[in-house]
Length: 139
View 1 (cartoon, rainbow, N blue to C red):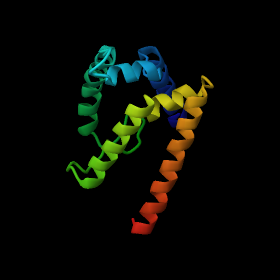
View 2: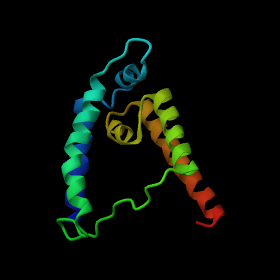
View 3: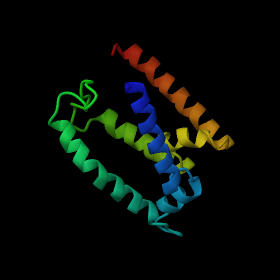
View 4: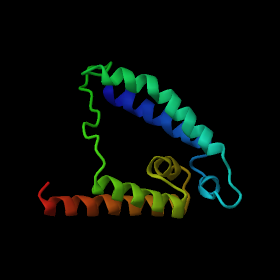
């Protein structure tokens, strides 16, 4: 039941990304182009996503287990540190260059676009590099 629920949630999330245009790098880059032909439509997508997430996240913070009985796993760390800021900057730079972020990249894999495949491979390489560096740090 947990895997089916996770699959259905991922499917719904991916469909929402496709419907909102988040899998179209040109649309994302137009949103990020504040000095040019700015497309504000993705701001509405983000506002809608934040508004939709407020109620379930508030509910989740008050519970120790999910509706299906799994332990609730919310981030405990709340302070800003160099690693969080550096990761955010790296993510933002990559998003600005490619117009793709990880969630939409996974949804785009189904389209067969070579850009999505290259992005996903680069993302996996970055995740493996991070794992190697973390293991060297002793974490």
